[in-house]
Amino acid sequence: MTPHPIRPALLSALLLAGALASAARAGGLRGETQLDLSISPAGLTNSNSTDVAASGNRVFVVWTETAVAPATTNEIYLSRSDDGGRSWSSPVPLSSTTDSVDDSNADVSADGDRVVVTWLHGASLTPQDVQAVASADGGATFGSIADVSGNLKGDAGDSDLLTVHVDGLNVYVSFEDDAANPTVSEDVYVASSTDGGATWGNPVRVNDTAAGTVDSDDLELKTTGSTAYLVWIDKRAGNDRVYFDRTLDGGATWGTDKLLDRSGALADADSPSMSVEGTSVHVVWTDDRNDVALADQVFYASSSDSGATFTLDKKLGSAPLGKDADSARVSASGSHVYALWADDRNGLNDLFIAVSADGGATFASEYAIDSDVGTIKDESPHLRSRGDSVFVLFREEIALVDQVWLAVSPDHGAPGTFATQKLSTTLGASFDADNEAFAVTHGRDVVGAWVDNRAGGTNNDVYVNGQHFPNLTAVQHGRNFAFQLSDASPSEEGQLFLAVFSLTGTNPFLLPNGVNLNLTLDSFSLILLQGWAIPLVSDTVQNGSATTLDLPLRSHGYAAAVVIDLQSLAVIAETDPVTFN
Image (cartoon, rainbow, N blue to C red; front, side, top):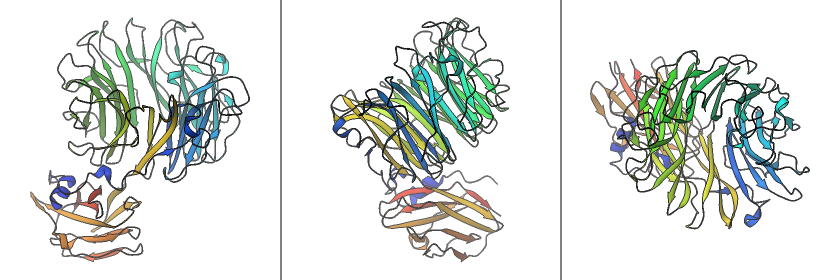
């Protein structure tokens, strides 16, 4: 039997006759926190280049701060949260504050208790080294500063593309370097560590072309244990093309570069993005093969065998020829693949998303995730997915002022399920946000970070804001189902309302208001439902105890559930339809 096509989101909307607030506003934003307030009151110094990582329920934000006394140079700072972004530590410097060299462009990655931060040591117009520090205790303490540049010390290339990834004890740092042909051509390098960042091997040049002969750009690195994947753009064919390579031995050796695009000898590709889910590798980019030198379109290729082979690339999106796409991003979760980009088909750039439910074999038609329809410029998207949910961080430019927004879909990016909200809530007409980044914790806390100049005229400070998005899951044990809501903290006041829908055959049944489970906030643990029937009886869960409801059995069917915050009338979590027999 095929599950009924009506989605839980639609059923919940029918239940409350359209009165529900958006799922993305459930529980509300926590409010902005200035992370560098103790070292930069009233915009005393300037901040830039934020990055965010999460591990478990810890969140780490790093950035560059200019000349905080006693230092007279730009240094790298970190602030951490141990509770999903609800509270933050005072900022601590990670780079040396006693030398006379600027540090910039920090990047952070975390896995378990391992946290590694890398940055460029040296001014942008002088030779730069790659430096790093590692923590084995969740960011409470960090070891000594390590030289990651190794035999390339003295010139680490392009500061915009320094990236670190941690997976267990395997750590990888990718960067560009023009040591073989200074100021002319940059090669692709990866330095790796197999002991959590305590020691580093010399950087390995990844691109197969002769050193210094071809300029490389737009690196994207992803990892899973001792396997790491890299995509980039280079000009070995005379124009910008998309190349891929991988290591299977922790970064010691790399394979033969693979050309992923079929754009031809005249087109230029730009900014590839990659996502890895198990043995599947997904890559998107933009190129102008169909409108050379005028407008880009979005293309996608994938591998189901850990990058050994790739599908032929295919175009995504239906914008008319001549409409320009950029900032393509991809994220995969289970069998779902999400491709996101900006294009100007309606005027100013909107963000469009196309969703595949079959691992990238096919994609549904794209749609805009917000409703401004080309009247407001959307830019700089960042994309994450976890379970059923899709998260997008981006900037909107209104009257030449940029502000930071978050869009969330709780239902696999289905049309009509995205809701947007502004993270930089106090920015006025004369302030500009930039350098945004975000992360999603294991407990589904979304934390965005950025810099803006509200406090200090020309000086930026670092701000964070975020929200918790709980996850409602259904687990079957024989004829029993357990519905469990992870971390029910979003409803800080009032009560939660669990509504269960039975879908049998082609007939949906909505439960009357009086027969749902009425739950108080912190006492919610889990509900056990034996069998399924219409109507259901009601009960209350208190003090964290589970309640078993004895119900008349049906022979088969499908069920879906939503949890509603009664105070804000918002759907805060929902399940996919699950089968009972």
